[in-house]
Image (tube, rainbow, N blue to C red; front, side, top):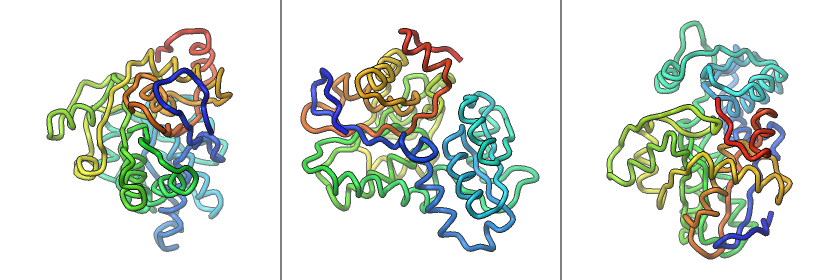
Length: 293
């Protein structure tokens, strides 16, 4: 979708927010679970997620008729938790540090069945990479693609596909300034930990990179940028009022970066990764505020 706003570039939006679960995560969850053997998922599936991968896993599990469990950080937004419940999933809320450790280990006491890693599973990244193939098929001459960076599975999946079919297209990762480890790591040339503060941009931002994703990103991603929360809130407002698109904080990171000139001139695609935002947060943003947790 073309977005006609005052910007230093020609702006296009890839609206993953219009997926059935309101997020791109349905692609990776479907790819991973359906490629696994029945013996792996017949007793159930589980994941670690702030909400969107959880919905993707729960969606597929419901289709297969098996239980789904989600280990979620305790600051996950109510809109996403409610969606998990509607899809029949069970949520285990833990602290951010416990959630991150669970994602690193791929295990949690009492949980078995198929674990779908929201980032590191190559089948998940392959599902995300289809976005890159679609971009190359649907739009010629893309100079840059801006992608929200959470754990890196979306960015690396898209970048891998574009490297094969449109290698001249630059891929720029977008993070909130409240937790931007990729931006810091690319600047120093080595994996770097940063200070992290939870924010309304709940689908992105962290204190560190998963080691395997750093190794991929350093060769696939052209650059990364950290965006102030005020810029992200403004991008949410612009998407709603000018594009008639509801985006969550992470989904608006790419537009915030494009409007700030981080992709330069030319034809730029912003990946709007999701639209699952709490109504009170959206109302605050539309009223001109930057919502607090």
